[in-house]
Length: 346
Image (cartoon, rainbow, N blue to C red):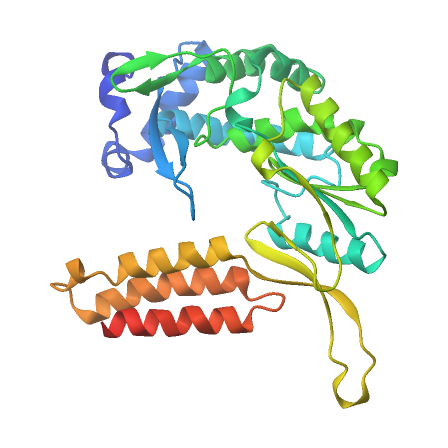
């Protein structure tokens, strides 16, 4: 079946239909279209998903199966090129790096005396990235014209929302395989311009934390962040931007699902008392876990066999515990376990 004659049917194509059509056959057709320049991208389907622990929604743009294959192949080619340049402070959406690597940097910096923290979040980061500035950043490392043309086509493909196609001049839509890489390519300009004298920057995608030695340094770091983001056409989210002083008995801050707070050990069994940065699941993460457990153990699933409900519940609990088992999370993990048992008994 010729691809161009089935554009709107392809939007609804599922993986099962692709397997029925023939994976090798489809890949050969896509390869021929890319080589001949006949490949045309379709608008991504826009959906809104709730943000965990919040009433807000995150827009996701889901490309067709064909376009996801092309984007994934493009990412495989481009990622090693840009990975050679990315800064060590960038730890999100990258291979062989995880959220726990970013969290460990905070612990290390606090141990060495950085007790002033600047935390912020880039407002609507994926939606606000300018296409032209993004292409300029890409062209610093990529000169292959067909690849650049394909990237421009991906950015201009637009989104299908409420039956209408919109083609904004900004944004790298969340949901496509290549979008996380493009976000890091764009924000690499911030990483590259950051001066270590303004504090230790930790960036996980669009979440930023700077560990500083003093309030003065923290204030300079925040001003520098605002300046660099403005140069990129971005701005920090006011509601999530603040400076915190870490001290025993004082406030802490949330980052990547964990709550961080400076505590002092009790010095049991003759051991010296030690001040350190502790972390455990944040209140927001706990609410999200309870909401998910409540949904999985809802009374509307009473017609299912108990084994099916337990299997679904265990799958969520294993994933949640695997992420939050680090730090000082024993009490909160126990609370979630007891809550799951109670909901299941109900």
